[in-house]
Length: 111
Image 1 (cartoon, one colour):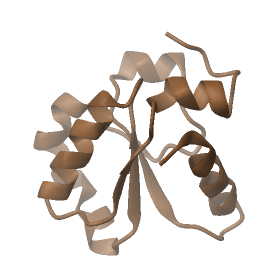
Image 2 (cartoon, one colour):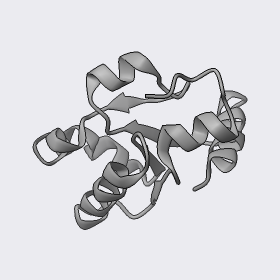
Image 3 (cartoon, helix red, strand yellow):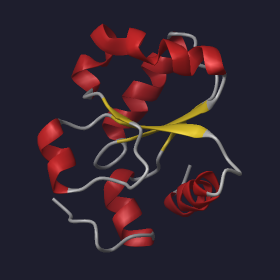
């Protein structure tokens, strides 16, 4: 999913016209620098295998999950883990929060 698509979906979600989960797989110190408004949960990618059970309600709901990190690499790995764990609708944010900052919200700090 590209940043503009995510922004459109986030706007639609605010008005009740879309429903998905937004998962941040960066580290807590990165989230303190910048975060995409509307993020539902932070689980660092290194912790995801041990904490995947926290996402069981997401899996059973059948809703889409959009995953992001700084540049897209960690979230791509997280997407693979989620898919292998039974999540069927998983999307990686192309270019991560850096590309989102470039394309959608330049007020987000880059690091």
